[in-house]
Image 1 (spheres, rainbow over the protein chains, first blue to last red):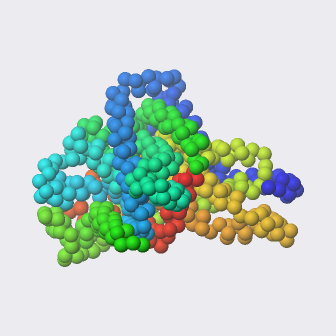
Image 2 (cartoon, chains in turn red, blue; image 1 turned 30 degrees about the vertical axis):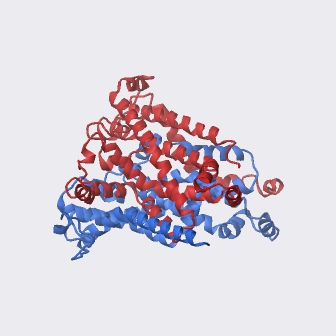
Image 3 (tube, each protein chain N blue to C red; image 1 turned 90 degrees about the vertical axis):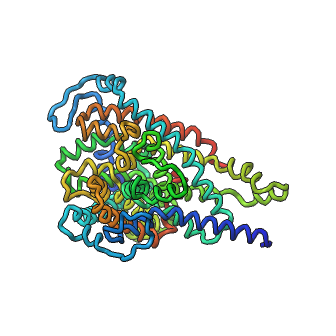
Length: 295
Length: 282
């Protein structure tokens, strides 16, 4: 840092460098956030030129909006149910890849590939695979004697189809993160454990898992925050159905604002409820991660 | 290495290769389907070799005049939007990250804190007000209405990533240039940026991926079919589900995967490194 030079050269220089980015940031991030808070206290609608302050009416209405409640429950269900596979599947793959397997780069690339696809491409792929009439999975499962239903049209399985799709999509991303975490564990620890007579399982439980704690927390919180906002998979695979079985908060928000009611005020109130929930989890992340990143 | 360990490694490798193939099968199935004749697509049992193969679905989505032709146009739109957003975000975040890393001035910590703090703002939360803003600007269904908000979404991450890198550049290089009479802009463009090519590349790939794949924002910000980017065009084509549209949809899905697949094959290591850095230091 060179404060004297900066001053001599003109105190404005840093601000000139910052200006374009800050304009972008202020106009398209900060302002919409605050505008959204204001809208949530108004009766704004799509196409309505004027809107009026209505106090907490939108928030009060959310208390009676059963569809919103269902969407909250669905989002929580999705988040909780998907957490175990999202934590476990990439971990198992990463540990296996870290055991001196040949073709590592190819294998990592194969698992990572779906993550380069858009959610729409991923959704269409699985819509097609799970098709009850012509989907190949249907054919092979039936051949194996599994009673095949229309998974996406059945309220008890539709959400699981969405979870399966998501696991396929994001496993590669978390796999890479786990691999990085595994490589940061000092080799000497395993060597010392081996000298002490610890087997593979023992050192996995006593060394790998505890030392991966910060990575677990990162994956967990990233996944949970992302899950609260799940939309694309739902939109493509089920559009919230059957009935309301897979309608999530953002899907409901989208429908409220842009499909059925064009009610911006109410949708903004939902957005802020969602934001507060997500914020609580983000802060939880900082609390949990603090003090555990060093080992 | 002793013999049991070798056997164990070979077994594990075989198992993982089989798993990886299984993992890729859904994508392979899409590719295979896109190359089949329409009448063969819905055949049961599933045929894994598209014979006779055809590229007619690709021709249809790219060039024909039917409604599936929107895919060709959407491909072009996605390219324009993604490259535009990459250029905007790399430029603005590099310019902003430089003084945050290398100059001292009033409000530096506040500005950096605000930018990093904004990483916690979920995109879904500002969807409605962003729509109101873009509508007021008259930017609905325009390229700038997609490019600028996409860039704004990635800006904070870009500043964070680039600042970390700029901090590692030895200050002697800048001092030497300063003594030679270079002004801050010259130092930035002739010394800092060239030294930062790998991290700028990682940011460009990250920004390209997020603009290319974004779905929710273009879904609401575009209502003219001619301006749809690929994910929106593909998702809406799904509505027209019928045996004849399977081929074109699958061809469109393959086309949508192509640019990132190419980037990925060329820069596999850099992408993986980028994910690693963004996640664990973020």
